[in-house]
Image 1 (cartoon, rainbow over the protein chains, first blue to last red):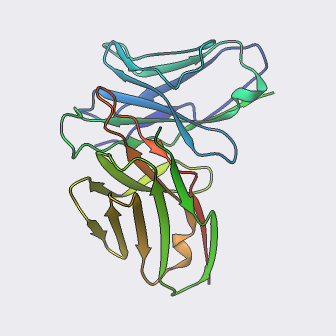
Image 2: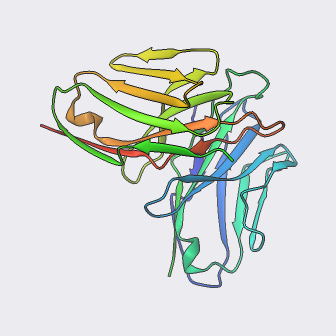
Length: 116
Length: 114
């Protein structure tokens, strides 16, 4: 059973370009979470999605950032008009239906975004 | 607002020592707490998950305890090895209805010297 997959692993963008980060959850998982880790800081929650639904986007910046998890295909985190402050590691996690307390999040290897 | 703190921020120990990493959280109402390991430039590896109704969990040389009433968790590593060198993160899941996000501490950077 493959783990959570993220691509690309490293992404370099110039200021003003768009960045698209992809996350394929573990097989059987229908819930995806995105977290951001700025240099020398802890992981911060960004958004929680189920298939075709955004459940909690309380951690998403108000502008330039969007996320989706379509019925088919990976979850996408999209950053428009990137700025240097967007440089960070972006982690995706997935979980099975989180109906019980035993639910656990499994993390991908991350995408390291560098904005030049 | 839930806040998670980890002390110490960094720790350096000789190989073979037993050590304790601390995690504290401000709101004792949590669903669970999870300990992770993060190697430089890598993702997160789950170490132990403790349910809110549990007091501790063990896996090999690792033992994690949870004291909800005092808002604390500890990760005990027995007989440390150089391969244990990494950043250790704890994360709590608050009981906010409808969301299952984790709130992370800033981590403890552990270095085990050979």
